[in-house]
Image (tube, rainbow, N blue to C red; front, side, top):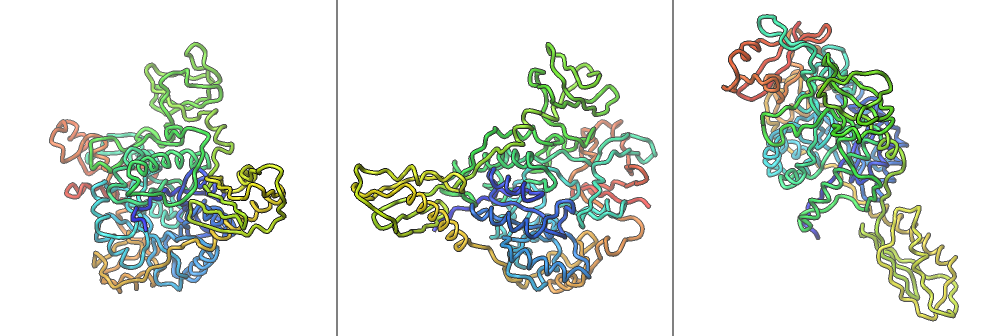
Length: 594
């Protein structure tokens, strides 16, 4: 048995159409929301649609994970239990959860994955989650490659890490800003995206030091250049963010990361292998800059380096930088910062001798950087069918039957129950068996062991081929291997106390933690709104560092340090927050100001 580590490319899916496109473009697994209790309420899917995705994905031994990763209120426990059974019955491979009550409900033996909201950033937390029965652990986005390596050394279950897409500024997306300010809980799939709003910052003297800046709006994550480092560090699943994204985004990003992961497998064929089967043929060249992005960051993968992580001037897509106006085509969309500092967009009617003729009058400031936020030709191309995925199958025919064995390891044999007659000349059955269009198979090696005097009519060979495909499909379904729920072991939670950000919202979750040594509890803010000042975000990202006034940086100009003297507050509309800096931990807290 091979001891190679399986590498999984995990793509998001808003619906069944996007899920199927993700698989066609090379995903080894997809994650999507169920009918309820997924952390993206606008990305819910029916049980029947999920069944269709499962049937399609399993042809390639690709997995389907369903997010049941919201907080669960007391009265909802029976409904969530039923939901999990419904998902199990249609063949879902695993549930992604954050509420520990699910480990104590009467669930089917389905695998459970620890959601990013479990906030796993230490080996101790990872060991605990493995011990209580999780089959895969989603790591916090904020970790460095070295931190991921240390966690990988501490556990045996696969580790899943984000590699691309939008970043929540709060650790692991555990953010109470939306709930406290708008009454819309991110932990219930209703995030109001407070981090994408413009803020005005005041210093301790009440002076405005930054006006209408997107101080909490991070650039988009792009780890494409670090895939090999992540794999060598021990990560096994590579997750693309974007369950609200359209198919064109998922196609492009999935194809781009498929290329990167396959490159690593090709360099280390004895150490790693793909988690699914089938070769994808893509009709375009993937380009991450062409899909929605706010500019890119590797975040903390390389540690805390003095590089910009935020998109302070706009939360909108930055697209790709236009280095030559000849890149542009009629119908494209461009954006730039105008003379007032606002991010302005305009359509391109045509380019005349290097001059952009827009769909409306506009003034491009001298030296302004132009961003193409819509490549019309690219977008049109991606609206078409852009990928096929097929499984290689070797076929042998002899006087007694036809044998097929595919790359999944599925093998079938059917008897040659046909009319045979003497041949006037040797026949070649290969062309008939090569006609596998409309199926998920492509012919690999074909071996003809028929006697040279045997003749079989083409119509009967065609019937044999169709039956062979049916038998391969049936055998694949019968031999598909599921991961199953692991038992909950006896172990101590890494802390004796939980605060509101640990998201305990029902008695079953409370009992779970108590049984594992927790003695002090605070209920989730969705259940019991706290009075007075409340920390709504804890971030590894630091506004001071982003603005070049880090308190630990001795090289900061004293005048700049004085300008940003604390306590710093940020305000948007009627909402004001204080920024508190824990320099010993290199963290920032965002706290409500009553």
